[in-house]
Length: 223
Image 1: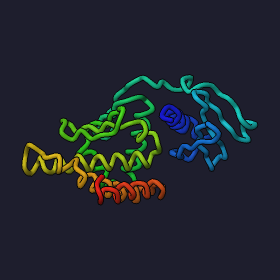
Image 2: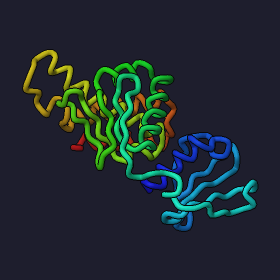
Image 3: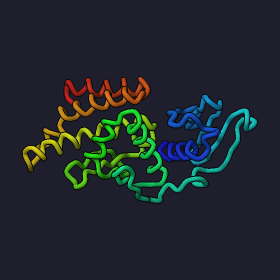
Image 4: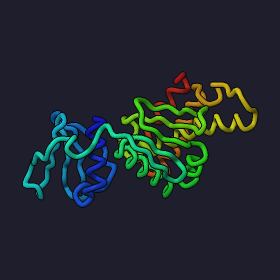
């Protein structure tokens, strides 16, 4: 799934005449991982590492190669965008920039908070905000970053709130900052509720918002 989503995002960025609108969700059909683009009535999919496209313009189903023929899944790069350092594969950097652009255009106040409370966004094995580092670093898994652009934007907002809780307490009271302030069950609910607000503002799919609502409700009885 992770490698397929990286490839799909690359295809959207480089062949937008076929694969638009960007950021469609990935789903499964008969062991294929697939994205469908209603604007062009085209499917793109993977079966294992093999890549297929489907549409009238391609005369049906066509095998076009393997994921590794198009993108490097191992290369790590770094780029500073709007004062935020982005570290990861080229596909990760492209995805992060696109999600930040959504926040910049649709939720500018939140975007300013990200610039203030997140110094680094780094591709990693799991998602976590390292708020006590200088600068604060958001490590994000491919599962969160490549699911969809608006999901990723919501995740960035969520982790930014964790960092804001930490930094606000630090500025007022100094060290140490208790875990209860920024990484407890109560703090998690605050961040989930904030994520819901931001995802609503940017027009994320209602199914994604409902999922976060469920997580927030679970925090009422213990995250």
